Each structure stands twice: as C-alpha cells, then as structure tokens.
Length: 583
Image (cartoon, rainbow, N blue to C red; front, side, top):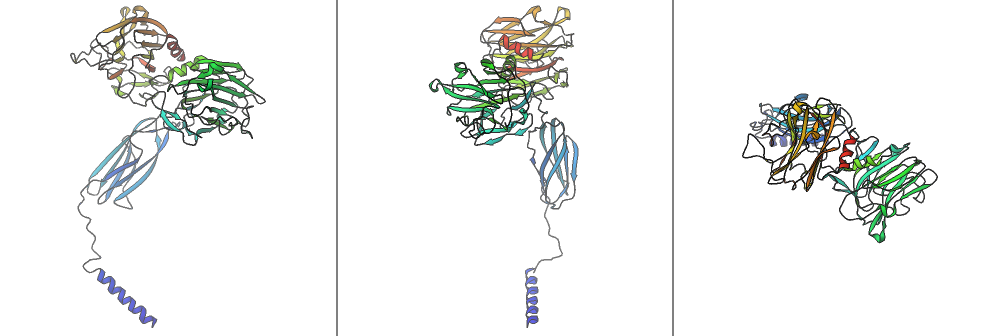
C-alpha cells in the first residue's frame, strides 16, 4: 500500500509542476530588456571634504563605495589623484557591487578619489570626492604635551585619543569662532594621567565662560583615589567657589608634595564675576619651587612649594573634581571651556600672555604644508603658483611667493572686519620686484578696472624701493569711507632686503589712530577718522591684486610666516610678545 501511495503522490507532483509551467520555455533565458542607463555610483566614505587626522606621515583610509546598473556591470576602476589603485571585472551580483577597499598610502595634503564604472553596453559613470589628510599635529609651544581645542569632539591632539566622557557634556561657541566644551550636571571628561608621570613641573592654560549655576566646581583635577575622596597630599586641584555672597567666583589651586598640601588662594584678586558671557583666561604653573595662578595673564597668587608628587594619581579630570576629589562637593562645572593645554614645564608670564594673545586672533596661517586659516579651517583661494619653503620658516615651513601669485580669502568665510584691526607676520624680504602688495583689503575700483586704486575704504600694507633701491620702505594706507590716510614712516620704515634674515612686521588700526611696527619698534603713528569696510569683500595676501594694482603693487616674491589677524588694536607690549615669540 505504501508503494502505491508514494507512486500516486509522484504522479500528482509531476502533473502539478507541469501545469505551473504551461506557456513557459524553461530552456529559454529571460530577456532583461534594453540597457537604458549608465551605472550609478555612490561613495559612502569618505564624504566630500573629509579631513583625515592622524599623526602618522603616511595614513590609511577605508574607501566604501557601491555601483549599481540596470542590466550588468562591466568594469569598475578606483583611482586616487588620477592613479588607479584597484580595478574589478568579475562580480557575484552582476547588477550590484558593494566594496570596501583599504588604501594605505595617504600622504599629507589634498586628494581626489575617483570611482569609474562601465556597463556591458559601454555606458560609463564617474564620481569624484575630494578629501584631505591634515598635517600631523605638531605642538605649537615648547613643552606642550596635551591640547584639546574641543572642535566638535573631545579629542586630545597630541595623541589623537578621545576622552572618556561622563554625563552629557556638549558644545557651544568657542573663543575663536569654533566650538567649545559646555558643561552639564554630573558631566566631565577624563584621560589617563600617565603623560604627567615623572614631570617635575606642570602648567595649564585655558579659557572659561563662567556659569555659576553650580556655586562650586572642580575644573582641572589630578588626585589619587581615597576613601573620603579628599586626599590632597598628591597631584593638584584647580577649582572655584562662590565668594562675596555669591556675587563672584574665587579660583584656587591646591597641590600636594607627597606628605602635605599647599594652597594658592589669591583671595579677592582671584575673584571673577560669573555669567557675563565673556571669556576669561586662566593659567597656573607648578614647579619644584613655587606655584603661580594667573587670570587674564596677570598673577593673582604666587607662593613657595616643594614639588609635586604624582603617586597613585591615575586620571586627569576635566570640568569636575570627580571621580577622585569630591569630598567637598567640587563636582561638575556648567561653564564653558576652550583651548585647554597642559605642559611639562613651568611657563613664564610672558609665555602665558603670548599663548593668550594668539588665541584671541581671528585668522592664523602658519603655512605648514597648507594655505589654510587654522582657526576656521577655511582654505585660501590660490592664484598662481606659490610654494612652501619647507623647514626654513620662523616656525617650521613658510609661504614663498612667485610672479603673479597670491592668496585670497572672502570676508564671507573669515570674520576679520571690526572697528579695530591688527596684523602680525614675518617676512624674509625679496626685492626681485621693487614694489609689492603684502596685505590688502580694499574695494573694487569700478571706475578703473585695469588700474585698481580705490583707497577710500579698507587698508593696504605694501612696500616700495627706497634709497636708490638699497632698502624697501613699508607703508600703510587706510580709508575712512570718504578719503584715505597715509602712515609712512620714511627712513624709519626702511628694511634691508639683502640680509636673508626674517623681519617682524605689525600694524594696528584703532578708532582714532594707526601704528606701524618693524621688529617690535614703532616706526609710524598717526591719527585718522577710523576704518570703513564698504566694498571690502576680499583679503589679499602677498599681492595688491586684485584690488590695489594701479601703482604696480603686484605679487611679492618674499617669504611670509606666522600671519595673525586680530579684531582689536594690539598694544606695543602685545606686538613685542608676538615678535619675541618668533626668535
């Protein structure tokens, strides 16, 4: 019976499948239709404009892309900067190709990733993505071992490691227009304190926008764990507490030498009014002889100390006393913090004031392998063919000019215009051209398109041959909206172009006067009615072009380095700080 049963089931199954295929030729292939479109390419990573950050000279990147075709993919080619790095012609799924390719030869600079795909009908598509490998981070200051710019991430730049984050810290507007750390209840960051082990001295510099919703808080703490969370015999604690009935916040430093702790409490000198919305600069130094606390570059407390002990200090806590120093409720800080740096040296007051001043700048170009404003990450528009003089700058590399060559920034992208304005930079002067524009921001001269020379607004800093060509004279011209004023120091503003030495230049524009400095010495001062920025939408660097060419002040073949712009009129002391910093 079983055999008859299975035989009947088999006959029924054959009949069923036969009936399902009525009208279908199982041998004939399915017609896919006409090939109507070229392959579609999607690059999932890197995105357009991606910046790869690593401190390795040669880096790796994982390229993630996909290719889809309505009929069948024929070939795919993957290129970087025009050179093929991989190709594909065999596909498991002939309509969809998903690939991740590890490219391990990314050098510093700008790159173009290109994916090209061709289908069997010969139709092709190409997609290109621009990305850049940032130069390895190089500490700007001697002794700097830790730096957090808080640019949309909690990353330390020397090691490129991310902080351990607790609670819900966030980001807000920073001191230089980027982002800053913004504190919250029970929120803070930590790093291993191993970078400080064995350091005989330590310094910290940073900015704060003070919020006293917590009437006391830890700010920077390196302390050992303890049963009472209040072991002050080792490490350090920088913190704040309400004073003057809560009208101000008092900032204090405590440090341990291994057996006891020392207090650096400046009393009222260390008081700061909170909730003003203003950034305040803080710094402290601890050496084997003393501790010093600074607010806005000024000493508020200084005292003797026998040297710091790091025993059992396992973490650096940022914006809280937690986890190791909470015994007196110095918990999280709801304030903002920016530009945090730690050093394994005891900084001098001049060094602290220089760091503070540089971090007030609104444009900075170090010309270290790129033409980028380091503050906004905006790339200059390059005209002509400038190059870098590698290793011969005041600091690392330098810009080297060439004929018909200069850089520009749109003032829509860089915020540099203000009632007060200053510039500081170094030049290694080349007088192959007997006159040149150096820094220019002026209006378009619509009446003279071929000889641009409208000087009624903006400024022009330039040079011209003097003393029968033996020297170059540096001059400033500023427009107040209706007329221009000259700041020409005569022979005092002359510099010898034949020395091959770097020369520091600065000029300041205030509400009522302007000044020109060479190597920190004032060579011209004069009064005027204040600068007007009407029509000034382009900043030119190392040429008068395109807005100041009527008198032949074209490109400068000199070298330039360490360009800083400020939305303030620098004092003579501040100019000297910048000049001395480059020596």
